[in-house]
Amino acid sequence: MYVVFGASGGIGAELCSRLAAQPGAQVVLAGRDESKLAALQGRLPGGGANTLVAVADVTDSAQVGAGETWIGVEWGW
Image (tube, rainbow, N blue to C red; front, top):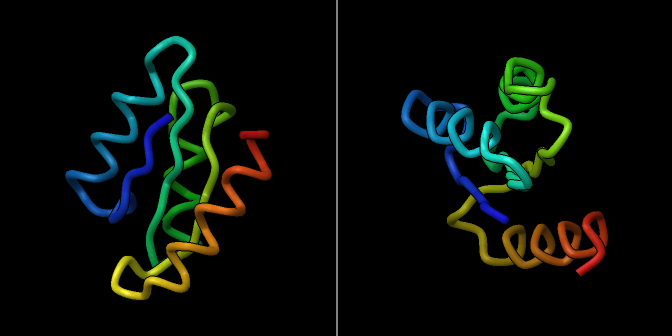
């Protein structure tokens, strides 16, 4: 499982694309702009079926902690 912060930007989006193409990979697209993250998810291999969108500001520890808990619930770990 991979969590990519800044996923909607150039390098982050490319990294997400490469990771999502790997068999069995689970990728969390994390960033501040939900609409950009959702658009990226739709462009990923397999339509982003093995991905989650997490809206969070990496500089806010409360948001990151809540996101970690939510990811665990969504993917059952």
